[in-house]
Length: 424
Image (cartoon, rainbow, N blue to C red):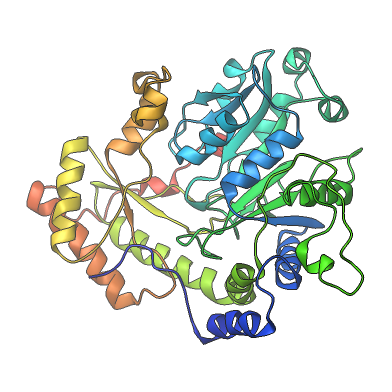
């Protein structure tokens, strides 16, 4: 069986973790701070805070910006539930917006969703492909939109506009117009969950890129205290000789990352750009080279000058099939010993959001993408022979359902090469 998304583990990672275990210090300390510094360098910014999950990271930043009950935060309808749940956890309302054919939030539809209660927009770089941040920033800075913004806290008055957060759970290593993701939004939150490109088993990273007059170093210090129950010293500092005394200056949260988990991510980060990311692209390109020969296959539309994906997912779409037919194809693929997935069920299809009044019929583009999407395995350990097994399993399964569909058509123009200029 070809697994869908196993974590990358090797002797270097095991050695890094072993060194932490042998050090006698497991929770937040030197390894966590080293992960923060190396991630900041990788993203070409100065400050990154490590936390226990991307969900916690988004909640912490929304809370820091003063978002609370009665406020609204715009989110794409096509995302994992955590994007919207983070908004709900701070008491605000997620306002859902439909997506374009690259799976990312439709920038043309954001403006219509903005009200006097809108305090933030959370863009999601689906599958590792960056959103159009220039379009989003240009829109929030329009005079008409600026007039709607009603700051309720000093932090909101300092920024003077809607805050842009990037839910980059999929996107560490991606670039937007030659800038690394992490440096494109006011705040970017990465996930280090077990299935992500870089993992710490569980964890998240907050990349701070707030504009003047904010001092990102001071914001980092505040968030670090807030992530440790509002305590002025972390446990590592308190254990130093004479360093026991501390204060609690804010009713904070317990969101810190321990060193033993940071060690896993640190070891992976060291070989990410030149090895792990390269191999992900190899798998991605292998699939595209095969499936672009079939007119029933809609390959991910991820080609644009200056922009690159992190190749976190390979969201293949099967043209002109129903949701039920897609599910049958997945069953057939599984019978061929290949594990695949679907990313994602649009939020209104999930009970918690459906019961809150969201309706999938209001988001036709998202449903159309979901109904025929199949996520294929994509990770560094996959060999080309295994990629061949995956593609043959998909082609055979499509042929089993629709015998004429699986005929090759090498004369077609692949859809993934025809993005409109407005898409990024």
